[in-house]
Length: 274
Ligand code: 3PY
Ligand code: MG
Image (tube, rainbow, N blue to C red; front, top):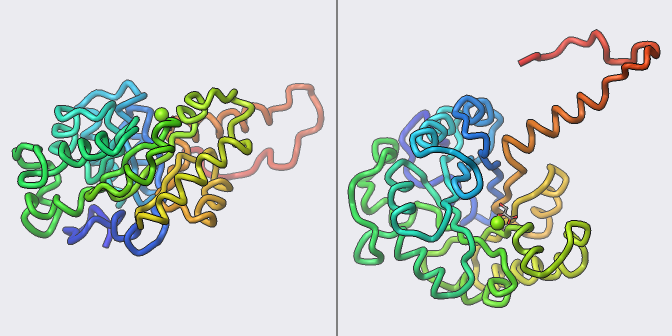
């Protein structure tokens, strides 16, 4: 059952992860509900508003959640930090899953779970949630095992501790941040995706297999998403609204020929301008 049209009984993203399927989405970094709504209709399983590295404001984030829901994508957010205030407010604002950055130890992961769960499992305080009326059931209990808890593994320390992190009860999976991981390993941009970087990511994937949790990664293009699914990753982000916009704009801008040469095939083509 998809988000938006009818009440959901379970979180469709977690349904997929639990079934061993891939759940593919994208990051929302443009701080634009209009872009979010346009993106949502593509068919993504989820859309994650990035509040760690984008200038999005809190109310705009809520409108991005609404836009995602309208298109049938599960609204999620990456919080800026493993912080009870951010986590509580973002869940109350309607996120059905959180990606939490820089989770380096088992204790960090336990702290994420504590922050995201109501008593008796955690310390989240009850104040309702914007999405309570979109789910079938009592949100307080529904939330317990239906809000996706995704911890980011993006440092050498986290890779070392991956199995301990993932074995924490309540953690559904992890999400590799390739950039911070490379920085932590002292790798240059050119060395990203090289043997050392890939070996660290393979270690995380093995930890996922050993613990029965879902592995995830931020991917650069569709080909990489396909490759990672084949490797066994399940929670895949394909770039971001900002990245995809820039890629399309760059490709088309660089295809313009101002030399006066005869028009290339495709000029005069009809398609969608919007
Ligand atoms: C990273 O690459 O560090 C990320 O956080 C990607 O989302
Ligand atoms: Mg990062």
